[in-house]
Amino acid sequence: MLHLGVFFTGVGPNLIWTAPNFASHTHIDTFVATVKTMERGLFDAFFLGEGLRVRENQGRVYDLDVAGRPDAITQLAALAAETERIGLVATQNATYNFPADLARRLASLDFVSGGRAGWNVVTTDNAWTGENFRYGGWLPHERRYERAGQFVEAAKALWSGGAAVHTDLVDVEATSTVPPSPQGRPVLFQAGDSDGGRDLAARHADVVFSANTDYDKAAAYAADLRRRLAGYGRSPDSVRILPGASVVLGATPAEAEEKAAWIRQEQTTGPRAIAFLEQHWGKDLSGYDPDGPLPDVEPTPDELDPSRGTLPIAWRTGKLARIAEWRRLAADRGWSIRDLVVAVTPQHSWFVGTPGQIADEWTRFVTTRAVDGFNILPQLLPGTVEDIVDRLVPELQERGVYRTAYEGRTLREHLNLP
Image: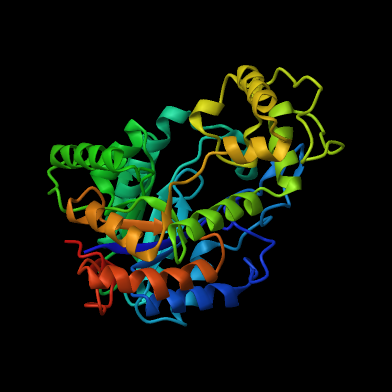
């Protein structure tokens, strides 16, 4: 059976602010409406992203996204009171938290929700986040998953009653103060496609939030992960794989493609396009027209400032060569600044088509176990979710790959995990 979640990052260019049916992405009513729609559509879980420092551009708060988000566990506790079945997954950082404190807060969410909590385990290695904790870049990049593994071991021990974990990156002795929930402990989610990320997932995760939605890549990823599971004595069926995906539905293929093109344009507003180039040029480009040619000034030699958030690995070096290639492309194709940014901005995998087309494609993915479902990245809340629930879910049910009713009450039961 195919499992569905919604991953709401809270920030980033995926969100459309200009649509007439835009709802506030900071108001609790938006989240309540979204999760109630998800429950109506029998989704497994609602995932909240979280950041520990607001994003910046040219040394100023980047206010073209949501500038700051409430604590994810606090938001999800409010949603627990408004819902009965939907899973509630909090993104929480294993680098800049303490195991006993975070394990207690996650256990509290699991307890008050009746066993519906999950923890999306993330790591951080950049110094600009660490500065908020007086740590700076204290943890080398290659050791972040090492700490995360030790952190999760300590949390699991605490959820079992008590912990005494003494390692080089985690040192804790504590006793649990929260009763266990009906599912025992929060479900563990992990995202990361690097070798270290895959190994952490194979050792600890219940659900993997992957980036592989091309069928062949998804199948290869699933095979690799299941091989790693065996190395830790875990069964091939002990983890669910849910890639992130954007969905665009239309009554016809042409309508869906037209809608997708509109979404990409709306996601890249003029100010966002300029800010994108400012990050690469390292200079104030506010005087340039986003619908005009690329800047005629030379960029600074420095590599990219990471304070706008996570950078693609391929973009961490080689800035000047990349800009030279962009200039060549823009000249050859007559692109404006905005045209270029739309073309080169990394896109999450998109499924574009009629409900029937996407249902057929997803049926192939899940029946061959290339994936176990998808984590939807919405462009609008609650509009994107309403569209999927009302138009795509019935097609999936008709093909026999999606539940027609919840069979349990806990997140672990929804995911059919051991």
